[in-house]
Length: 447
Image 1 (cartoon, one colour):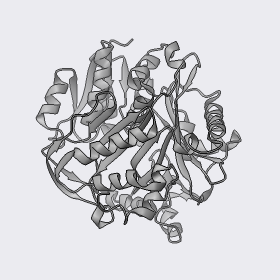
Image 2 (cartoon, rainbow, N blue to C red):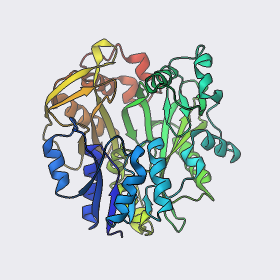
Image 3 (spheres, rainbow, N blue to C red):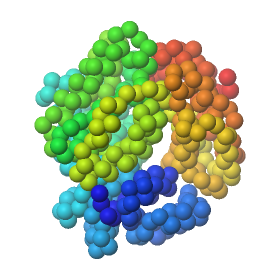
Image 4 (cartoon, rainbow, N blue to C red):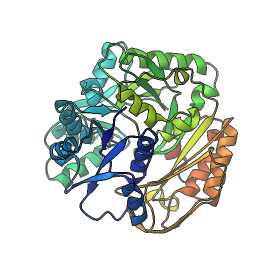
């Protein structure tokens, strides 16, 4: 195991989670920290981190200062780098610099273009005989505006190394930046009533692969997650679901076969009404929403991530994984249910969480009061999870948490989340990616 690791993470909740895993393994921690005041990180949270980590300050953004930060980390004895939960475009300079300095990379040890490039990932899948989401359009980003005139506002645009967004948001981002350099972009074609399902795998240096249970991520709004489940009701509750699950797992193994990759990888698919899988994207590293998987499996994925990066094999007990729990995760967002889930902004002065069964509930705030939140910039306030031996119990426990928690005075989407949990089609597991778009008006008030 490493003696010292450099963590690039400016989100307080995620930083705590990674540092906690390092302390458990006896690993010393270096971390990035902005030299500018961070209003979303109260003194209590930074003080607790200072007890467990040393800091390297940056002025602008970690990605822009990657070379200097890596040099300082190397001088101070770091043997590995953990890129936290940074986006793809921010990870690249750190991974390039780490590999050139012979630093181990936790989470994803390769710059394989099929993992770092949204467009190239689709090409690889197609070459392997994996059906992909049909392309509505592809070309240079400078031509997106003209092409987007005839698209739906819900059309997803995939930008190389930069995740996904809508045509309108892509235009706004370019305007805000003045002029971004051209890049290749890909717009998704239409699939009728799809379900968004993600499968995550771990791969060690010896080539052993551990496939985790799939996650359903179909309840989305403004391209952000609202409510996730594990395992997927589409496969758990419907006839033929187990056969579809086996196909999904085979496709995931086929995608990584022969690939130079060690770490954690999530593969995203759409499931159409005919039961066919369509590959969307590959996401190397661990998602900030990985708690859902941990609740369903009982695994500590950050600890596994660190062990694999240090050259250890996937433990035998993990390979015998069985998912005994159903887990559900809700994302408390700064959005007004009575105004069509429009983003809200304002102060959060207090947060109160009810005492609920330990081990079956996870409360992970993304901000801590007092704090100003702008839903147009970062809508997520907290992620709230619950698990049970059966799906119905997990849903009831999450509803109880949402009914008794208090986040004031900022308006948020808790009543909408409770409305989803009470919806008959949702409770039956019969929903798709357009569920919230169709239902948002009916979910405006408490059930």
